[in-house]
Length: 156
Length: 156
DNA sequence: TATAAAATCACCCTAAAGTATGAGTGCAAA
DNA sequence: TTTGCACTCATACTTTAGGGTGATTTTATA
Image (cartoon, rainbow over all chains, first blue to last red; front, side):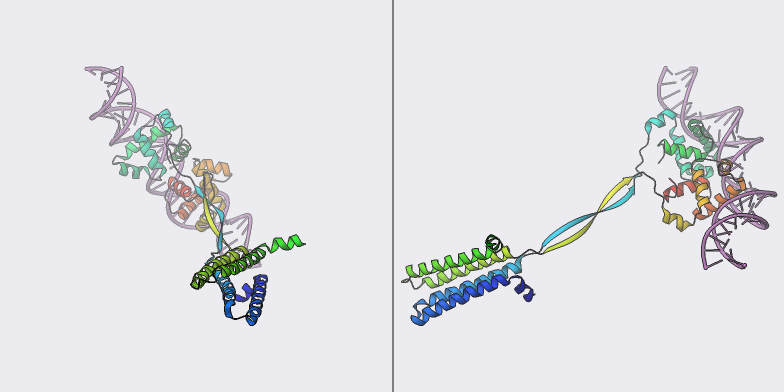
């Protein structure tokens, strides 16, 4: 870490050290030939060097590494299954509320008998309704009715 | 060459010039406040602050900010109604190519007889395949098989 | 080459779906 | 009040689907 720092700021340090040395020499000569009246300059010079170093150290310490956030898009494929009843088609075909109900349950895979039980009616009633549904959808069997109803968006 | 040197070491030169100017100022102040003995502490304090700031400035200028690159995955929802076969589910259930074929035609509303004709096989073959499909899907009737297969994304 | 799985086919039987015909009740609109 | 439609239910019959058992051929893999 320190070695790394030294390596990277070699020029600055050398410059600083040279300047400090020069200052020191200048002061030393001045102090040698005069009394301590000029000790202030030496004191000031040392202070300058020390606090410069301190400032550098603080900056290094406080500096936060810049974070570069790169967003990578990841596609998530979602099948849209939002069903919206085609009221217009429903009206056009003239399917009654009950007929649609039977069709829906048919599509869910219920047998006629099961649908009858679900709706609290007799099996005959269900046969009647499904016959009517087939007639209006112009189909021959439940699988055809379901397929067509899905395509016409009558059921989800 | 010289310009290049100046450009690269601009901060250092500025620092040096600043230091020199400050030294001059120091000398000038020393000479001006030679009488005021109490000015030493104030003088020293100001010097410390100035050179700390200068050090920080120098560090910021010279130090290249460390850049941390962080990769963040951002999910992009792609809504589609295009049918995508769930190969995994298909494999899990162990549906054969032929079985899936029969299931698809079943969902289209074809009777067993019609499917047989379409695939150039006998009605018995279709019954066998559909029986196998029901077994693997754990259902009892074609409408149930179709409903489940759609939900499992085996058929569109 | 042997083996397992897929594909194909047959036959028997039952259950479920689908068709046809008819009837009764309730409700809303003309 | 009458009429038409939706809903409900019944009966009889036909067709289709579904379950079970068994067999043969084809295909791919170890």
